[in-house]
Image 1 (tube, one colour):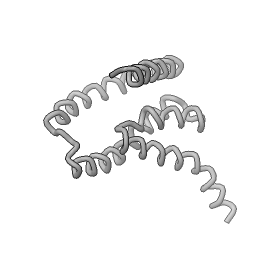
Image 2 (cartoon, rainbow, N blue to C red):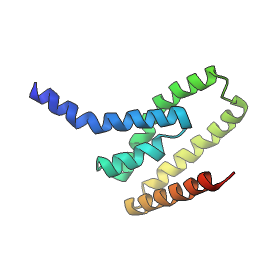
Image 3 (cartoon, helix red, strand yellow):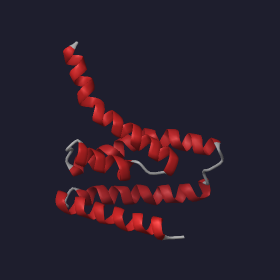
Image 4 (cartoon, rainbow, N blue to C red):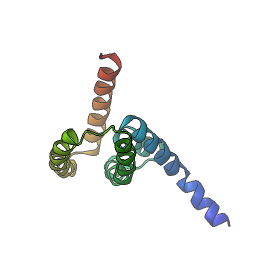
Length: 126
């Protein structure tokens, strides 16, 4: 009994990260990178490269269920999505290969700077 309670308590932060990331993904189209990576790294002390890779694995089922629901609501334009998806696959491969040779510190700083710049643009833009 105590062993299973310990396992639940150990998994609790990751369950919360998943719930928040999934919610943000379905509502705002974000979650993997913006919510899960920082939460895993800062709150659960998961190394940044592992947090990035793990969030990519987690976003697959999250995206599938979110796309299904948004498609049902008529909110997916496949004429836009398909060409972006093709080039995103190429970019994802190149970025993942590059991440293997970039220091964790540089990855973390680059991620933080990107979040600040994009956040400022979204908050202050039209």
